[in-house]
Length: 628
Image (cartoon, rainbow, N blue to C red; front, side, top):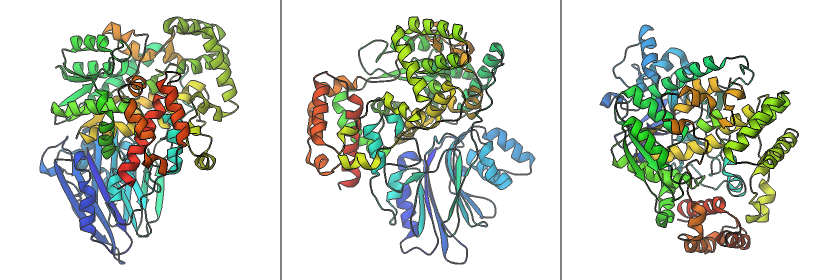
């Protein structure tokens, strides 16, 4: 886990390339405090060059043999790499059998040898999270690759004379050929729509700075021409309707436990984030059984309300079962403005939800306790239908398939388990039916805050924010959108920045591509049954989880009472920000509408905490990056 940076130029630079790559790399010292390295390589006949920089966080092979940039024996291939390839030991054995020799025990060298052996086909063999840059001198090409889910970030900017890339945007901004401008379309989506519509594409909050797309690699030649290739995608036509319950549960358990096992590989201490929900508890308990010794856990309590902001009842059950060393972290919202400003220095872009404020404080505690690797439960809901509205998509699928008796049975169980009304079910089914005719309706599930923006911005950037997906059933299509376009991408960006700001590697077992492929091949009945989601996980974890957690009917998510914070302890700060001269001069917001909305919130008429968080982030982001 590290930070990488570099650039490739078609002609001899008119600036100091060695100094520039060093400056770019140094902006990411938090991503790799243990080692650094830079290299400028010339190639071709016209003065072309490549500059590569690396900051290292030592996780696998703590010796100097893992230093980067790393080259092959002939000095014709160089690699800089951020992430972990968890199956590196298995690949190393395969490469050794093919005649390759190794001088280190690092996964970096495995990637290098794998590229020598298989070329760009090597990426499809990796199980992990990575952003890698490979400079192939003989081919005169730079190759940038991203893991299947885009867990590890890799941004790029293509100027007239240089192609610039880095793990973080601030490093790209250090390059003298980079222009710094805000991306108003991204800002429109951030303010006007729900956060899940912000990270649906490869753009960033900076104009002309993009991310290497997930599951893809980009080749850049001497002339700075680019070619993008995708190496992995889900097959939407392989749903196994005839799979037996027991076979599905056994296969799921085997893959899940192996995903945890691979992510426990480390030469430094490993801990777990533990919320008290099904996902993080399953990982913590599986890790305990695999390691055969207690693991350190970190949990957050964001407010007073039990079962919503305080899930310590369930967390304590896990701690007792696993004999864990544990830590509870409680945020103090009085410092939220200062903390957000500090966070933006690491995130480089506005942060999606207030959840990440609390998780940032947890990351700080993890660092304080000397833990360098932490496992998390991200994406379990998107994989196994854990959100409240997933049930409605399943009900609609049952209706479409003619399984009316099962539909009514599931509706009744869902209503009773979650204290919902029949009217809510009928309303949602009508919505999904109309949505099948017009996918653009899906965005209307969330409050439209475009009225807070100036008219010119709304007229220019108002678009239909929906992606149809390829699956025949509505539940799989909804989970697919959340996994690849909406909630999971919005989770991965701040999770990486939060943990890497504290020099911590965060690993997500539910994002193992084998588990994703398997779960997307399953019919809805294996995800939702008897009015409860995550059925297959509940069955697979019998005897592994505490029963009070395994059979939980409620779900809260890791949220914070920011609505109350903005009405009380942070009210004066928020009012001052909304009415600041800097915000007014930007020409982005209708300040009168902002004040009306804020008055509604503080009076308790409506809950606008989501958009207030976004306005706070956006204004502090502008001040940091554009008001110097």
